[in-house]
Image (cartoon, rainbow, N blue to C red; front, top):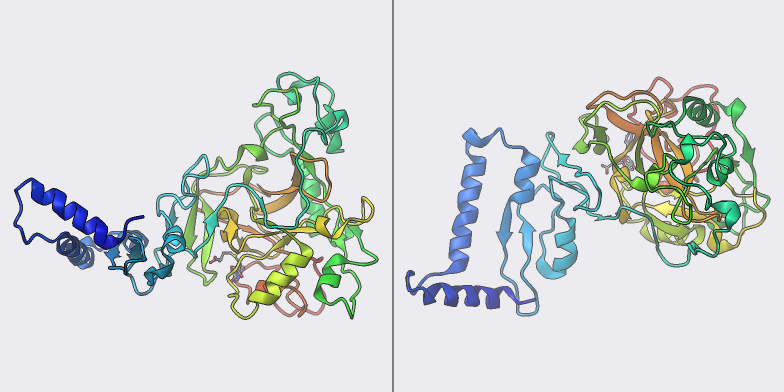
Length: 430
Ligand SMILES: C[S@@+](CC[C@H](N)C(=O)[O-])C[C@H]1O[C@@H](n2cnc3c(N)ncnc32)[C@H](O)[C@@H]1O
C-alpha cells in the first residue's frame, strides 16, 4: 500500500503533466475543500431531510499519516463509533458499515441500516454469512462421514413431492418439516413453539457432569440446569441425489427476505426489522458466529468481562443433543459467539416468551450431532416494518448466567421475566 504522501505526490505530478493546473496545485487542499463543502451542505437546513446515518457514514476526512501508515478513511462525526485513529487502518476500515448493505455483499440480498434516532453507527464486527471455527472446535465435514444412512443418494428432483419421506426427511423423525412454499409445516412449528414455551411439554436432559457448569467453576460444580431436547430439521445436501432446488433445502439457501437494521426508539440499541410481510413459519436468517468450545467461550468471557459492554450479542449453546448421544469430548461441546464475527442475527433483540421468531436446530452438512445450524423462523405472521425478536432464554434472576447477557429488559411483553412476580418458570441454560 502506498503512503498518503506518495499517493498525493503521484496524483499531483500526473495532473501537472496536463499543464492545465497552477504549479502550486495541492491535491490535499482540493480534498479538504471538498470535505468542507460537504460539511456545509450537510449542515445546511435545506438538507435536513437526509438520513443522519447516511451522513455519518459518508462524511470522511482524509488524515495525513506518517511514512509507515497507509492511506486511511476516517469517520469524522464525533458521536459515531467509527474510528478516529489511523494507526490500525485496515481493521478500522472494516468497521465502517455500508449503509446500503451491512452484509458487504456477503448475502444474496442487501440489508441496509438506518438510524433516525441519533448519530451512532452500528457496532464494528466482521460480517460472515456462515459459521467459522475459531480454533479448537471439532467440526468436520467430510464426504466419507456422510454414509448412505445420512443422505438420500437415490432421490431425484424434489424430495417433498415423494409420497414417502427420503432418508434425510426421515431423520427429522416427524416427516416433512417444510411445505412446498418453503415454510415450516404448521404442526411441526406449533410443536417447536410449545416445547420451548410450555414447561410442561419440555423434554429436558440433565448432565451428570455438565460441561457448562464445569467451565464456570471446576472446583465447586453446580448441578446441571438442564438442556432442552429440541426438535430438529435435517436438510438434504450435496451428497444427496435430489435437485439443488429440492424443497428440503431452505436454510442452506441463506437470507431471502427484505430486512433492515435500525436503531430502536425504546432503548434497546440496534434492532432488526422486516420490510415485507412474513408468513408464519418463514425462514428469516441463521444465528451466525464463531464456533467455540465451551472452554474457549468461558476463557473469552473471562478475558473480556472487564471490557465487554452489555450490547454484545450473547453466545448460544449448541446443546440440543447433550447427553442424548453418549459422552462427548471437550472439543465437541460447542457454542456460537457472535461478538466479533457474525451476521445480521446479532441485531435481533430479546422478547420474553411471545417473540415472533423461534430458533430451530437444522442439520445440513454433518451427521455429527454436536454441531448444527440455528435457524430463525417466524412464529406467526409478521407485518412489514415489525421488529423481529427472539427469546434469548435469559434467567434474569440467575447471577451466574453469562454476565454479558444481563440487561434491564425492555421487551414490553406481558410475559416479561424481568418483572418480579411470585411464581414463574425458570428458563433452561442457553
Ligand atoms: C444480540 S444484541 C441485540 C442488538 C443490540 N440491541 C445492539 O444494539 O447491537 C443483545 C443486546 O441488545 C440489548 N437488548 C436486546 N433485547 C433487549 C431488551 N428486550 N431490552 C433491553 N435491551 C435489549 C441488550 O443490550 C443486549 O445485550
